[in-house]
Structure formats: structure tokens, C-alpha cells
Image 1 (tube, rainbow, N blue to C red):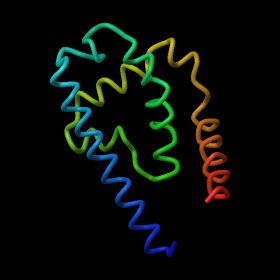
Image 2 (cartoon, rainbow, N blue to C red; image 1 turned 90 degrees about the vertical axis):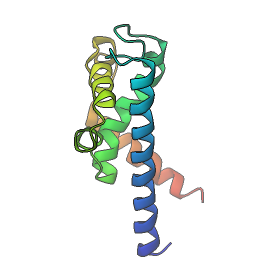
Image 3 (cartoon, one colour; image 1 turned 30 degrees about the horizontal axis):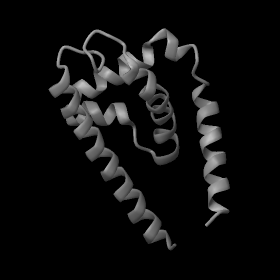
Length: 119
């Protein structure tokens, strides 16, 4: 793929992520506006299942794609999503079981390199 094609793919990926974040903010507002978790004040299986994903994305997306999800939330007014991400990532059970941001980025970069060889 050409550099122009790579740039277009990256732009489309950022736009897709931004749309998904907006949809998640709307969903969280609709299901529980009294946050901070999906079920309001209760940390639930929703966070147990999505916590590891969001922790990885908050570490890897800015480092690899240059897109800061928290800053995007602030800029676009996605405050319910930001509240949820902050609540999930500050939860002791999540913090105590999460590798460092550097390790998450390194493992993601390694996986991406391995995937390039499978095309």
C-alpha cells in the first residue's frame, strides 16, 4: 500500500473510532446517566469484560496512532464516556492486574509486526 493509502486508512480508522466513542457515550447516557459505571454506581460484569480492552486502548492508541481518547472525549464533550473510562481504569482490581503502559504498547507493536507477515 502506498503512503497515501496508509494515510487514508489511518484517517478512516480514527474517524471510525471517533464514531464508536460517540455511540458509546450516547449508550452510557441512555442506560445510566448517574454513572460512573454502566449500571450507575455498581461495578458490574460489563466493566469486568470491557475493562481490559479499554485499558489497552487508552495506552496503545495514543502511542501507536497518535489519537488520545481522553482528550478526544474532552474536546467533543463525550463526558459520560470519559467518566466511565476514568472509573474503570481507576478501579483497584483493574489497576492491580494491568501491565504497564510501556508493556502494553510493546506487546501491541510486536503483535502488529507478526500480523504483517501473515498477509
